[in-house]
Image 1 (tube, rainbow, N blue to C red):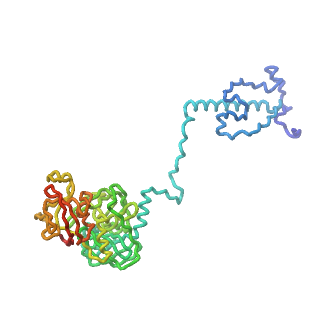
Image 2 (cartoon, rainbow, N blue to C red):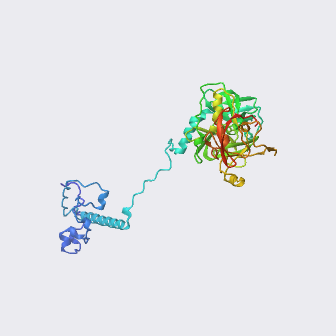
Length: 464
């Protein structure tokens, strides 16, 4: 009930003129206030023909509204004549207009096909919350894991008494003393065995080996490789971190390559990455040439010499040895399989020695075959040459194992112990698999005829 002591907003004010004193439009207006506003009803669409609250055919707005209750809502009280009649009619008309408008919008969107489109996923935030770390890609994860595994086994080697040259430490770092020679190395056995480059240590009077954890040891040269630019250094320590040794025969052009070393002698344990750019490269260095090298675009600088080249699993596949001074992104590493025999000799306490047969030869390819009218397109063609001064050199070294086995100039070696000789398996790389003194079977072509010879490998001299 209405409290008689409170003003009723819907009770006519006695102080105002009575509405009956105003002009009337008609009898209906005086008898029923609800007839004062009578909008013409618009026809409802078919989807609106069902009763409110029915669930048989959901209407478009029901897509985003909660489901109607299972029991019908209570009937609304009839508006009193004095109270909410006109207001209820206005609200009803507004609701109908909104419904009709939404229906028109739905029909428009449906006709345009907008409702058939798949919703796009929500955009990912570019920024990361404070303290969050972006997820690593598979390549980044491989580099991180390889660096973590091998870096403790990578050392810096300071060599006193070695003249400066372009392959060790040619650059002055402002404000820092320049050692006479500096390079890198990798521990391959926990008992103090280190593999490095020959040019890093050759001619030194004192070696200092620095580990990544700050420890320093005096080093001695155990042996110098007579075939390649490799050397082995020994320090008097045990229980050192050692790098896992991989298999360079399985690497492929394009695969991930990771280099670790001490570029410029000032940035120890620097990690760079790239790919294997090529295999079987030959380069000219002081004192001759080095063959069968791995080419990589992983950044290699002076001071990196002797450091390891890794694959994606963190295994050592090469020893970084040189860079192209007139280019960028062109570095070279000695395959670890070439180094493996002298590593095994060092661990066995043997003198470092390489097999030798005493010939000069050229690896045959299609161009050489066509130019020299050779019967095959692969193999090692025994032929004379010239030394650095231009003097002619014989194809067969007098008194060598090759001469004793009966090899001649013009012979083509096609296999050694059943291993085919080709550009992927050059003769010198195949011979490194065998120890001096071993007798091997060699297949050759002479005058178009195949022949088999037995040859006992000699020991390669320091200056063959």
